[in-house]
Image (cartoon, rainbow over all chains, first blue to last red; front, side, top):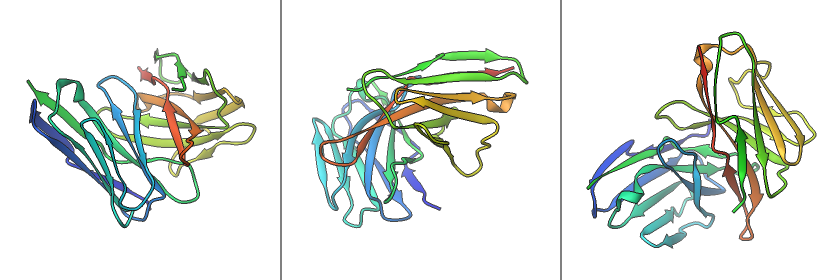
Length: 111
Length: 118
């Protein structure tokens, strides 16, 4: 079946260090979305990537979509305590609107 | 952005009882809503896709007779957990999708309902 894997599962970084999470799908995606979930909260939409090789930036966050539209990454530069949470990628496959969530990467920041 | 509400935010019930969870899109109409379940420290697992005016589409392994979904209007979907058991204790989250001007769609998530079955 269609699966979306995400690594690492956990990441602890010193405040100010960079952070990257990687997402990989078993099959080609229509598009991929990224969400952030704070502890005790619900997922909040960050961005959608549609085009092969697409790169989008939101302040300190950089999102990439692979050329084959099977993998994606989220990179945070100079992390801050407000970045704490779990980051999920969610793949969308052709023909439907369903989101297949990755396993998530929990980011904790050491002040 | 669009707002999705869920009620109740948390519920504790006895084993064998049924619990109804409501999901509302407050400022937009949603022909499609989704129901997810999330166990502690795990990812969101899609349970079913709820379509206004038609039967829900359940994911493999989800019992449709246990998790009853009704999408009565363009702004309301309900999930009823029937004959709940302790293993049904989880965080249930709904979402509603809207189209993006750039194409594709964005899902707006409700705040979730934490169900504890004793």
